[in-house]
Image (cartoon, rainbow over all chains, first blue to last red; front, side):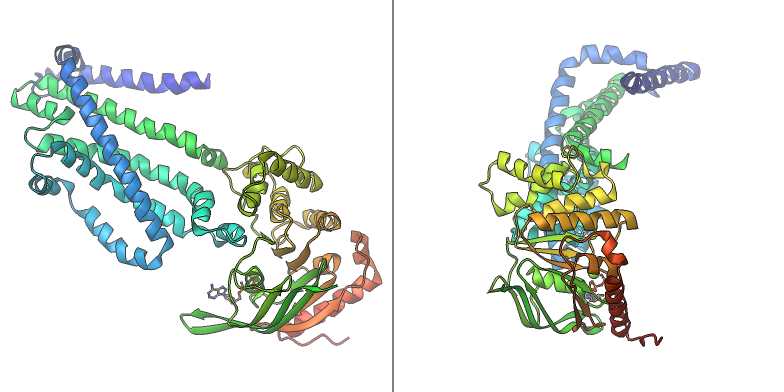
Length: 254
Length: 262
Ligand SMILES: Nc1ncnc2c1ncn2[C@@H]1O[C@H](COP(=O)(O)OP(=O)(O)OP(=O)(O)O)[C@@H](O)[C@H]1O
Ligand SMILES: [Mg+2]
């Protein structure tokens, strides 16, 4: 019953959403260049399915690659900030400042820095936009570790690395995954941003752009829906990993 | 019998924003091998600092700490620690929590041997059947029992406990005193127990050391002249009452208050 509810509730909500959307478009008599109706979309998917597959794959792998970099770099930075007070004081303002820069302004900067490296630029943007939450949450998680947790191993002469591996890292995992859920959406936005803004882009963002240039409005809406689906897939991918690696934290709160 | 723990003229100060804060000043303490030393003293006088010095987690500004005939400068594998907070790792089962020190102290030990050792201890403290549970599924007293098992699983020669029963209700606490007494009869360790419960210090200790107010020094040592296989009833004898009274007066002196005249 519970698993049934888990699937039935969101699916019903989705159907309701689509029906409402269709109804609103129909009731207002909007033409498809104002707002396409869900019934316009299948035609777009059937006609351009190959482009959707290729674009979807490009968007997906570049987002995941950027996020992967963000995880490695964010973990490293978080560890440095978590273990060293001086590093924390030095890096925090820099990080906050960097995070405050609207990332759209970086697209032309990157494009000039690495001319023609579209894949590289896209991955880089996904990375740049998404490492911040990971670094901050890991840093805070490590620096707020109660000293007793450290002392149970330190009193046995365990090395810093052992303490990190056996205690600090697993203890920080719930916070890390919390941040990763934010980061995955950010990385996805970063990828799409570059795809849409930069000329001769690839991926779903570029498909969206070509829909716009060709005034193919149903295609544009179809891309938006595809993006939403991909976003959901990525998000639940992280949730799945969280269940595997930090599932113990959930039990604790119930 | 040799002194397993010897602390000589230890002095220590923390540096704070308001300048150095002297915490220990001329602290002396000796514990013969296999003995149980209970330490009491006013709140904030430096008891936890003392445990960190004995464990080698910190170095004193002056004075010496000796364990097993060696000067303590760094942590050593022959020490076990337990705190008021049981600090069990939620992502590990109770069994794997108890095993943790073995992973550090003896990496070559087989999994089967580790499990056998941990199960033996868990059975001794009455946690048989809880091996696969998560810490959050246990009561506070049970968690503290598991924490004790973890502190001695690697057969340390010194067990250092910082108010391990402080957060428990009275009945659970008395149960754990008896568990502690039973563990002592089987396992060989020398023990330093920080406590703020005078009855606990008399029930468990072979000697009770009273520390003065901050900066702490050794103010008074009471030899608890009772047999090792004590029962809680012993606390209701005249002998125990006299000792408790004696300690209470010493604590008052340590707190800087006058001893009641009667
Ligand atoms: N790392 C530190 N830096 C500065 N001051 C500290 C530090 N650790 C402890 N102190 C101070 O040193 C004094 C002694 O601390 P300690 O924890 O050893 O006392 P305690 O006897 O264990 O206290 P309690 O009875 O509350 O457990 C306290 O006043 C405390 O505020
Ligand atoms: Mg203390």
